[in-house]
Length: 245
Image (cartoon, rainbow, N blue to C red; front, side, top):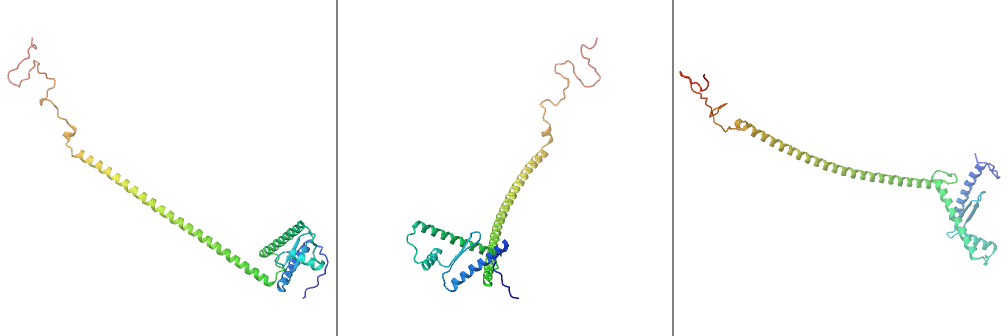
């Protein structure tokens, strides 16, 4: 079925009116661009929304001001020469501001298209171009992410090698310290064993007994000047003087 005719009247629904304005504005800007490219024409388009927002398009590489001056010259004759320099600068600044604002709006529209919004006014070729642009961006993002992961992996491997080297160095130092400690223990044990062996082979007389500096006869309770004399046993008995009555 064919599309029915749309009655041209003000749209009462606010949301529908804004959506229709956005779609037809984009379509009008697109048509103005196509006309300037296909026919090599100088096109200037100015749109004000109901809120006073400005949308403009100018095919001229210079500015909208020159196009307006050309329009004024063709329609109303030569422009007045008594316009002050200040007013001309203000008008030029305003036009430049409007041009930058329109470019900003175009960039915002392009961003919305990249996010999948406001795709209704776009043609099939524009959608294909947008798809290729998204594919290229996705490939670039994946390539950058892969390179970042590879750099992180290389950094981790380098750190792993450094830790392994440090671990081997610590093991070697620990092993050397353990060997030195064992040698010291063995040397101390040999010194203790040698001392015990010398004590075992030493004669007991020399170790525990000391020679006495006295005569070999045991003299217990004997004094040389005593009158008591000890004689051998025999038939005669000698009495000690002073003991008999």
